[in-house]
Image (tube, rainbow, N blue to C red; front, side, top):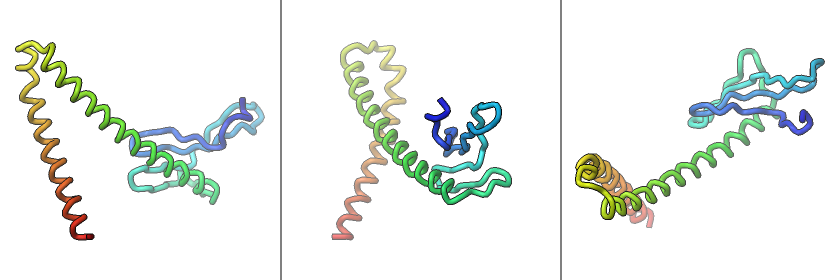
Length: 137
C-alpha cells in the first residue's frame, strides 16, 4: 500500500487546504503526514507551516494542485447552477400539477422574491456584457 501513496496529501478545508508530505520511510513503517503548508484557493497564498522551508518541488506540486482545485470548484459552481435550473423546472411542474393552496401560500412570496432578485442580477450582468461588447467592437 505504501508504494501506491502519493508524496503529498491535501486536506481540503474551506477556502483551501492544509498540505502534508506523506512519509512512509520510517522505522515503524507507518504512514506519517507532516504538515508543510496551508494554501488558499481564493487568493493563491501559500504559507509554510512553522519553520518549514518549501522546496521548489513542494511549490510546484502545490501550484499544480491549486490550478486543478480552482478548475474543479469552478466546474462545480456551474453544475450547481444547472441543477438549480432543473429544480426551478421541477418546481414549476409541482406548482402547476400537485401543489395545494396551503403549500403555494407558504412558498410563493419567498420564491417570487428570490426569482426577482436573480432576474435583476442576470439582466444587469447581461447588460454589462453587452455594453462591454459594444465598447470593444
